[in-house]
Length: 141
Image (cartoon, rainbow, N blue to C red; front, side, top):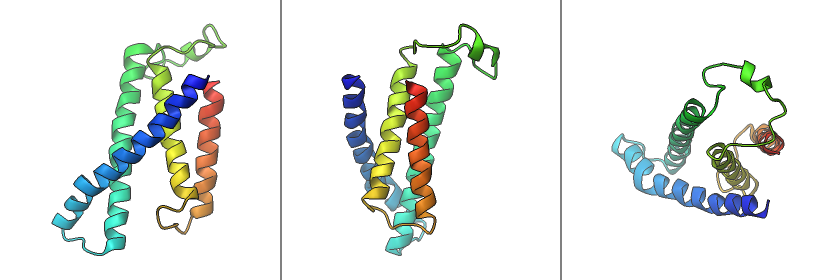
């Protein structure tokens, strides 16, 4: 719906601010504390540090959401097929999906706009982001 798209657009901006804030105020000072001085190394440390923080936080949130609200917790896969197809999405899962979509859209924009220095596997990374967004989109529908 339009509200879902507005949610995603809003959180693309939020993720951008979170990323920049963590980079400037947390990750680069940590890198400097441990003797990293070259700008390229500082940037790389911050990029990877942000990824670690993001995936730890959202991975934990995803596990908690599954544990608390979904019958499929801990590989109880028979619930994938009970009452299939599942057209209704529980309220706590929807924001999680949309947050993930916003994150991957934001990361895709960073790649396309070349905000970060392109890596040697740039084309593969772009393809990965396109496939990830496609999977999130179709599984959400």
